[in-house]
Image 1 (tube, one colour):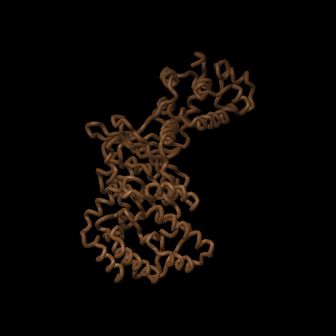
Image 2 (cartoon, rainbow, N blue to C red; image 1 turned 30 degrees about the horizontal axis):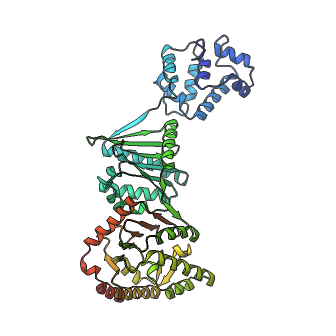
Image 3 (cartoon, helix red, strand yellow; image 1 turned 30 degrees about the vertical axis):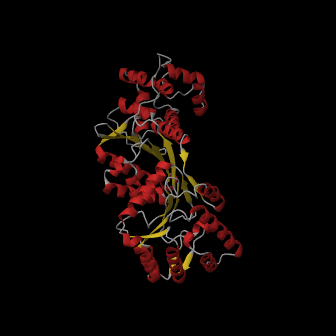
Length: 489
């Protein structure tokens, strides 16, 4: 405290760092009078015409600081006051400013807190249930704010707390998708540790979140796996969650709601993001070209390339069929030629006759589409950035063309899966070349493509594909059997 002789009024001025000149300007009172109120040589009476305006000004300045300075101070000085009351600060200021002297407890509290920036409090939860309760609080707040909210996630625990509870992992996925599909912007930082092998289960169960166009993903390499391991979720300007698991597997989660701590946590996260690698994303054919250039550099590698598609991909279409479908959707000749050029570029980048290409199709979806009068071709939207609908005749012609490819090329495989066997393979749109890259396409926003060369992430996804492939009975991987199924579906 700069001046030992202070009135309660002067005490608040010092606490909020308000210059006498500023208050004088705001309430139109001479500086000399304010200085006397501050020192206590003149009394600021509660019935004075300036009293109400001074209280309003103090509350406004306290809000500007965004540190809950007065809230924290008065919650301790006046413990019987209701901190949830909309009049809490107003009532406390009236009481404090009307007092003749400052209590010893108030002076000591001020001296103690003045040494630090401010006093922060938090809620501490125990166990996995506590972690879930904390996330539920964040989810509810974010959903209330909807497209105005922004979430940051740092997963140093590699989702271990989530993977250990598969039932809740499904609920977490559902809630995250609800946020993403309502326009909430989410930033997710993966922490890549040496020999990191914990996130394959997360990929299997939460792939719809990972591939969503509103999720922005970053990769941060940790070269020392002895660093502190924690999880952090932050809802911008609203709350921050920090979770920590001890060496004894005890789970603790703290929730901060004061804006000062939230801002500091956000600053730390943004500094980590600045040092991280952003997963590439394209929204147009021009942005896709550099990605195709990168993929072409791995074209001659003989590692397996996996393709998972909700509807069989356009890369397995003949150019004649693509033109038919584009004409049916009233594309101009110029746009049709542009799409064909991009189709050739993708085929050239992705396919290598010397390496195995495995395409996963869901039997349930194929049978459903074969009955429909019209089929929505999501993957063609990558070429056109517009909604594409094909007829049942187009769809069956496409299946027959794929059957022909199966009989002509043993390196071209189609794997028939069931949704009961795999939630990710055959139900999402993702292409992955072992060890080198993956492309993912949001089924709701197919014009948006994500691209990744981060080996640990690529290999995790490739492992999911390989694991699914190995579990499929040989009959459903046999080219002749699958060709016959596609011809007669």
